[in-house]
Image (tube, rainbow, N blue to C red; front, side, top):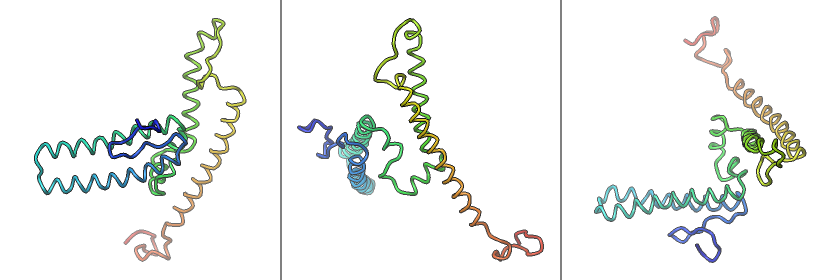
Length: 192
């Protein structure tokens, strides 16, 4: 730990401050540069055939680099988890892969509901025995907070549907028409 009380990587770089995704985005950019240097060192080692001790140090350094990344990511997620669900530091292509893989903004809201329900269920016996619901966890969300989450989910679902419809329209526009495709028989509309 340094005077800033943030975890420090052996190369001197600090983990991101706990001010959300923006600082993690900057950290991620630096981490990618370090990863490129590590990859170059590993490739050089593959051709140079260093002794076992040197190779072990290199592998340990690379593994330490990954451990540092996941510790920093965990700390950033603990401070503000939302940027981890909609990362600003990934490319548009990576966002597309997340979308095609089934990750939607509503997934984060569904996680909220699921976690809230589990925590409420765990507190239910004590509540029924005259206790109160715990503070500081999702089981203690107020009616107003749940209503706000519901409204956010409804707006998000509408926007997701708009995006899905636009994507479907784009796919339809990419289909060849019989007149435009030199590979379709104009009489049968079959590929020739």
